[in-house]
Amino acid sequence: MPAKFKPKHPLTDNVPAAIPVFQLYGETEQWPTPDLLHCESIAERSRLHNWQIKPHQHHGLFQLLFLREGSAEIELDGADQMLEAGSILLIPQLCIHGFRFAQDARGHVVMVAYPLLHKLVQQAAGGWLALTSPVIHRLGRSASEDYLRASFAALDQEYKSSAPGRQLLLENLLAVILLLLGRQASDQTSQNVMPLTQERRGNQHYNKFAQLLEQHFTAHQSLDWYASQLDISPPHLNLLCRQVVGKTALSLVHERLILEAKRNLVYSSMSIALVADRLGFVDPAYFTRFFKREVGVSPLHFRRSAGT
Image (cartoon, rainbow, N blue to C red):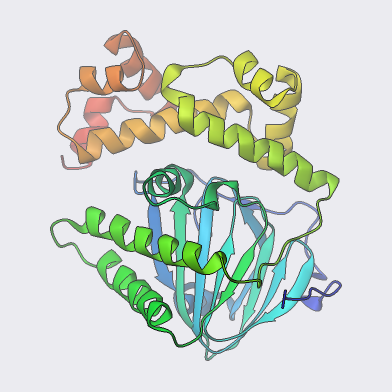
């Protein structure tokens, strides 16, 4: 049966009018590293905040929360319910969410940047990129569900390691989790689909813009082009981005280019000229100026400071 949501709960009584938008779990700045995945235990952060995470939302991040033991009160876009042990909560970007965990709550929180989610979904299929409302999966005791539990544990263990091939193994473990959840979604009815309000329609436009950006950022398409794909005007696109994440559409395009540049500089041996070419810059010197303007240091300095 679909989980039922109830009216406002004390968890949100004192929530400020401006819901914070985080780009990293609990942070408001850009990601300090080019990693596209973050994993930690539920207790790791919640214990620091008296087991309560106030309502907030994420820009560019997809969250998986696996509650292995204990319970939690969760708030999702203004509606509340209890989360039971053995549940996996999937939260797309821009969904407002908060938690009050029982002190015996144990499990894992995985944050995935949409560029990585896009890559894995392209390989393993699934509708996670288009998801605009939270989904809860309640696990039973089948072999595939035991495999899911083991995969979360393995992901957590590998995230804390520095063994060779760590990044590849992390991505493969995450792909396994998403694929198994996708299979379950095809025959489960426990999806929490929220009513489509005016605000959520705006979020849907933003989500489509984010998908277009992921597919075309190296083509350096104009904002007019992105707006035309959404059947809205460029000023409307800018207003939408400012309302949803507090940034202009152009700044989001620049952020995506910089993120990819950082990853290429850290995780590959490509020359700076080749990195520039891969990102659609005809002139390597212009790429260097662009990178320094956005990051504060040159690509070469950034690469050296990362130890590569």
